[in-house]
Length: 468
Image 1 (cartoon, helix red, strand yellow):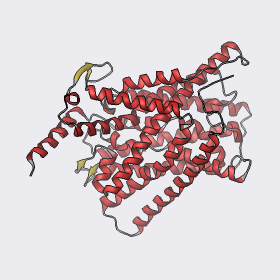
Image 2 (tube, rainbow, N blue to C red):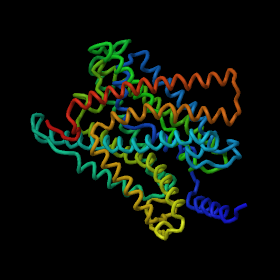
Image 3 (cartoon, one colour):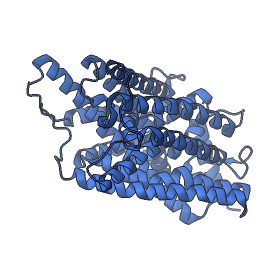
Image 4 (tube, rainbow, N blue to C red):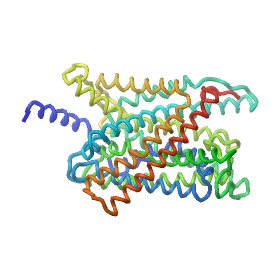
């Protein structure tokens, strides 16, 4: 046995365990899940239901919720290996895949997970900027009149959002910013309630009749209708995904009880609450606006008092601030572990200082200079990409199309089969059938996303330039 190697590994693991205090509960995990799942996508659900119609729309929302919950329970069991209760912990999604599957699948998982995590950070940066621009536009029009000219760039607003993320990124991990996830979760409910309330108000003001059609909104051609249906399915499917951060969230949980038991409860509560909001907001928006439901329900003309819509947008921004960190912290942890293993003797990497921070249970955190630099560089790079690719929301849809199937469905099912040593039989074929159906959906949505990107490139390339 190589005692020196074993000792180094023990020291690294011991340092990690000392820094990574697991104090999470079912409620903190639920808050993290709601923060990760409910994002700006909830505001597009009225449009998604409008494309699918009164029957297929709610069924799609419920169906994807069921798939997401089921596969999240399988993934929760993979947190420990080989036994889901007594086995060794897996700190990340990739560690779990490495424990059960082949090196080739670990490589595929890494690409899918971290591209999707980082892509979501870019998308959140753009979405938050658009909301800030919308607030500025609304206030300008209210002060100067509907016909006033209100133009400007959102670059400064995007930089302000990124500065906030640089500061928040210095917290060591998710367990140190539970308060942020709680605030973000509350904000997500707030703008969802506002959007729902305004939609219901609009519906009642129109006499309470149901707008829209059973088959969904009509389109200029059958091909356009197909692309719209695919994009609607994509919006719904990817609005539920949080598999790429599930293991990291589970790694914050205290035990006993067993982490997989707590995580399954948190997934049920988080996805259940999310589904209620999704169906309510999607159906209320479709009832209010019918086939003319906008892509973002908060941008609908005459939706409600401008100040209330502004509050909803501010809640959305605050939610995205927290959700950004839920997706960023796993990237930070992975890059830092790689740097520590690559240069274990470097003085710059091993130095650390204690800083007092309010709103924390311990009252202080340990700040390492190399972490400060690495995390700042990652946030800055994310901001630069968000500035250079104005239609990245469409690109993010394409990335999500290729990440939904592997991260939410394929790997959890494959690890469940390996863990339970499931051989070919009824259960094996049912699991593989579910995986194949989700693969076909991802491919189809990917095609629809490419079409949407091509269409987006035909219009203005600066979404942050607002003119009224």
